[in-house]
Image: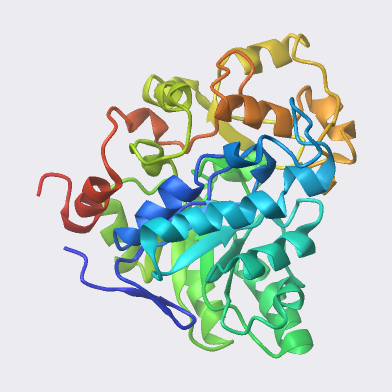
Length: 365
């Protein structure tokens, strides 16, 4: 049984389990609010909030897709998501994930602060200026995601010099996670870049800057995996894919079924307009893209800066915003379905409460 809690800044999470922020629309109010309620740390994804149903897609009344950055990352929808999550979890710690690679990163971070989130997690790049956008919200804890001790060193050095602070925790993510990886294709398969070999070097780097918790992520599936990471020195773990298999997950039922029906052989890395390798299920979309028969790339939402207004999307063969939103809407033929490497192990849908109990006490307890 896991007896330790997880302290991030001024917040104490009952169990050392962080739910990964999965977008678009996979971890919104339903999932994040319930995870926090049940003693983990629920994490709201800020990706594509313009698709949140209460907003009817966008304040400009675009009925198909949110138009431009301010609608795709809708402040109005984000506030509604956080408000509804709070109805579930009350004043328990609640986090949000803001990708560094998005357009309007600073504005979205400020929106998250205004919405009343306690902890902000950022990956998909090195958030060297993250504290700049939380000025006026000293209680908001900041947690970068890194894939190496070198990356943490760069972040700590910049934060200390510019803002006289260090992270409140750090998430170290190995190359078995779902979605975008902080590694090259080759590195994803090399022993030295696997999660268990990243933890000790990052712990050594943490010692040079103070004392804040390390949270291990990427390929963690069950109670035994959690115990293994804590034995290696982690204070907690982050898990994404396993939470897709819950009733409370905000994903469409078709999304959940795609993961449940996946096999070890069809969960693969593929190219992404974001510029990083991405892991998901090889579905009809990937086959169409490989044959250069994918849906047209129009860049309606202008979601991520590395895509250069659709240029990279055209090179890769698909728009990530449109394809992730299709997955959220349950469109099996044109959706992009991210999952971690262990997604094929997902065979049933259970409650968040039951899942956290299994993670804390063991699968057969």
